[in-house]
Image 1: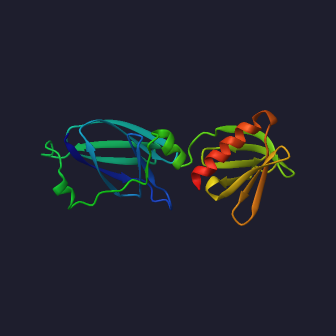
Image 2: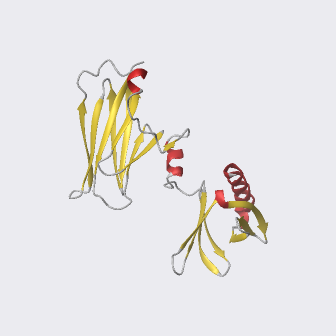
Image 3: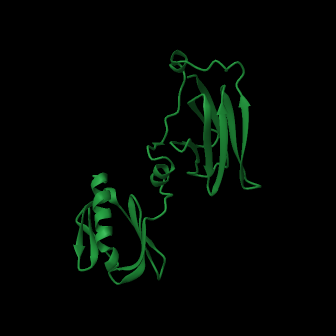
Length: 212
């Protein structure tokens, strides 16, 4: 099967820390700075490329049968991502390993075996698995439990406390609550509805074990 060089050039406002995310087939994520060029290789056939900048998404289907240069521009006036595609001249025969040795290819930031779900988890854009009204000490709020983290948002001041499972040593039951023992002997205790208690404990133990 033939392979082709695809180069993606990004153009957007030079705001500090901002990057454009480029998702390829919901399997690989590349993060580009302003005016940066991403160089990747795709096999011939149909592919889906998704661009994201701030809250905007642009989905672009691409039938690859030659090399392409793709310009992804964020239009600050319209607030939209605009994409222009240009075919690379005389590239129908594809690219081989010898040619690739002399090229600076871009490594993905994330590679997901779970498709889009895995990418969303990696960039923390996933939906919570569980949502409960609960307490943490004397504070009331909403507890959201995700695949890789837990968030507690207080009702009074809307502050969000985040606990990442990678920082949790163990989770233990504590008088109808869950006790997350974190590094440095720090304990985070949250109440859980009785009917969901065993299920949530099993979920957390499983996720924390995977992170260790």
